[in-house]
Length: 289
Figure 1 (tube, rainbow, N blue to C red):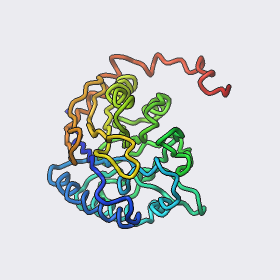
Figure 2 (figure 1 turned 45 degrees about the horizontal axis):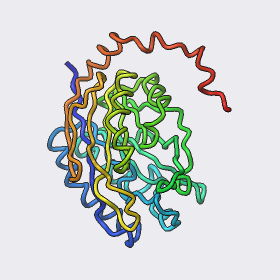
Figure 3 (figure 1 turned 30 degrees about the vertical axis):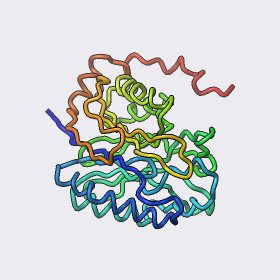
Figure 4 (figure 1 turned 60 degrees about the vertical axis):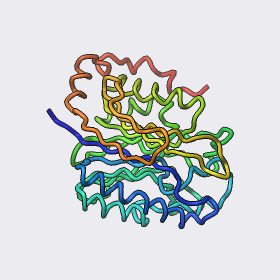
């Protein structure tokens, strides 16, 4: 049996949104580091944080102040710091942060992937960007176009899909077809309709693609926007669609679970969805109206 020990960290905001983005980053890193070390002590092999983990979810605003929260990847301080912790604990770390680029004024919602020896493997940029009341993401993020990278880490073939992406089944399938065995979905989502979907979409996607999924959400409320409660409940779901371990609704928490990676082959061999798919009939899926 091939086991993969995964870790997910969910957390509430640790500084006032009136503080500078740099001060908030420091507060969030200071709060995460003890849990990163705890993950290392527990032998976690792949660790992931929540969406834009060093900042509030600032998208209810349209305030250019938050552009100053963005950092380059891989040369920014947060990615470099996480490379040190990955190497220290021999742990793959997925680092979701706000990314600045060499083009002034162009920013992405991104996750850097760092291997267990501290090597930067690459990044995934959020593909689907919402623009609805309370979630003015197009003000802050350019859509990514990264051809569904799958990262061959020390421990597994890893995919990343970010928050709103999860509503689009095509990306899950593309990651699985590219070889992903475990896909992480760092998110920032509040109570309401999305909570109903929270325990439906990722399990359904895990079944449809025969892979493990780690879903991460933040906790608490964030003033001054107060768009709702970030309801936590980060979890691991198996290729059979069973939620195997779930975090609390309202607490900072590291959850750890041992995933049976042999289940990926067993489930795919049983259902044979990849054999029976008919891409030659799917032209309508990629045709604009």
